Length: 639
Image (cartoon, rainbow, N blue to C red; front, side, top):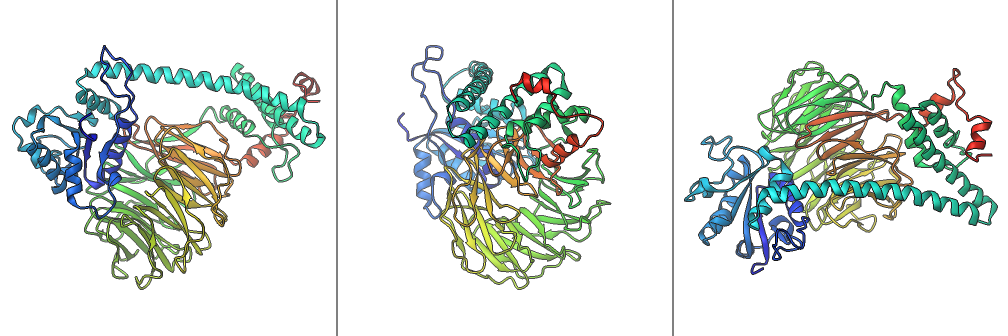
């Protein structure tokens, strides 16, 4: 090609997730070697230019102009936010002035083109004033969906029929599912053959016995699946129990995740088939979902300008919607569960009575969208983080500010109190996290420096350390008092979206755009398990309250539960019909709530009783004999 970039993606910073997702779809699309006789199509559509990815902070505007000139196409992520952006308008005007107006493609994610209404108009002024503007061929996500919109852009860029590419795309997806299913079945067979090999090949008695027990448990789990598929639930349940240790603290046989998966599968029919305990359905994407401290309620934040409170068991709404004037980014209960604080794009955070849904204070106002809001551990204060480059501390009961604003040089994405409430750590797109005195607003340490935007920052349970996650592909561990690094950076192959300590502070789990979550030793920075793999970006990862499990949320439409020590999955994937943005355990660890974006528009509650509870429940049931009979042991060579 005669240009360096296939396309330049222009957008407002608030729309960066959508822009990043589009870039990922375009750069990972593969054309066949010969499509309807076209031999000129590239194998990959890359590189695509996105300025926050390809330029470091501080580069002059001339670099942007050069990138625009070096791009074949201009794709504008259109929303009411980008329509008001002078920078997006300048980039569009620059492309028009260079005589390439016919190579502009609007990618509409929100709003209405040519609406004439400032609140809904999604085209920047440069497009509205362009001659023949209404002939622009837009790809509208709201009309055809994200996948089809990306395909429509590719068809436009390479002069192809949309129907041709879309039909091929759907055929490839179906073929891919069949191939992966075949591979999975093959791997099960291979796994059993390997286990059989170890049974005969190991000469050391103790290790041989251990291997044999593992082989037995995996084999029993696979045979239990066959019995389950036949409808023999009770027999499958007894086989899964036999394959698990009688006591997880003093194990008489090795633990294998396959047996736990099977036990949980068998437990479903005992609950009348309810695996997803309740579905919290709404008309717009869910940005966050969180349990109350007692686990009885859930609060969700939506793009329809509301937060909502639900009964965790029934999925029924508890109050009227908690209303804002723009999208609600997050919602959180107070430590005693009596109040809720919400953070919104309407430049405010608000405090509500959790039982009545009535506002408690005046709005907590910023000069830009509010990304997060959190109560202090004693519930007396609230800290908010905003795109106005500040975090602010408020009295929870009165809504008055406690300190001067905690200032950064760019957007503040998150703010969190220390466990004792004395300090606050903030994470910012100015490439730093900062530690502040919560009462005075004075800085405590030098800034904690990264090489790119900092997405999150969190204190350890004892308050002595901080872990930060960043777009520079690392998480980092710091001394909370001195600001000195504690370990080498925890490295991924792409940006790190979140990082969290385990309840005992010994481990850290990170979630990354490299399609993995990873578990690290908090003191040494060494990896503890193999990467926890998804098929797309991992948005969040969280430990269970007892630290034994990890739940991850991914763009691959699933949340997954993993053994924190082994890194092995312990359940089937928890599936949505769209990207899963967050997943969280209930305070007692028995449930998980997941929140999904885009066309799914639901939060779901999943039952996840601790393994010990399940084992005790069935082994101690006096109405049944859950052990295998002698005949069954002989049948499965368990003597």
